Length: 269
Image (cartoon, rainbow, N blue to C red; front, side, top):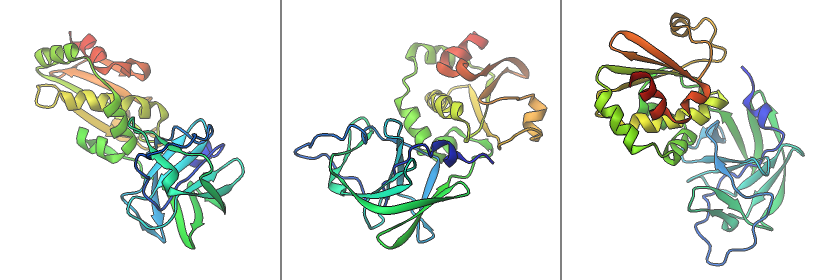
């Protein structure tokens, strides 16, 4: 299995063990390097060997760093920097959540807290004398409902929330969708799927109650020889197979999914 952490290690910042502060009355100057953390669904957080379901992991491409918020677990936020291998605790009062869902770490917020180590695909370190770990989220496999896909990864849910499908095209799909089924083959490990699947999830959610049926099917990595993928001739992800009745009318791959409602309508309209 390709180590997802290896691809991200060029820059990692982790905030662990304390909930993010709410909006601050007086906003200090933002640190240019540690702003714009986005939700990342690749990892689960464990403290002393116990998973913390309320914890959140964020990643900043600008900083090349992860920010992990521990939800209801006690302790201090932490930054991990892969380029240097260092860990830093963060003043929780200087962790600011924006209205758009991004998170900023304000200036002069960190204190050195040692280093971290990578074991397999996981990241291990010590915070406030407790063992902490980022564990790779298990892949989502097999047949899944739209709700299961959205609930499996906070990054999927966030991406679905941000996508705004066309109301006009959605209405056309409702009117023309009798007997239509869309099978979506994806990998929760796949970077392109992380961009496109949330859009499909949003469209499928908007069309719930209509006559169009969506099925999501998670594939392992690698998926060569996976029985259903082999049977359907799926060679890449994300791939959508669109049926009308028992007849396949077309396939959607890669960037075809940029506007899912338009792409599906193009095959059945």
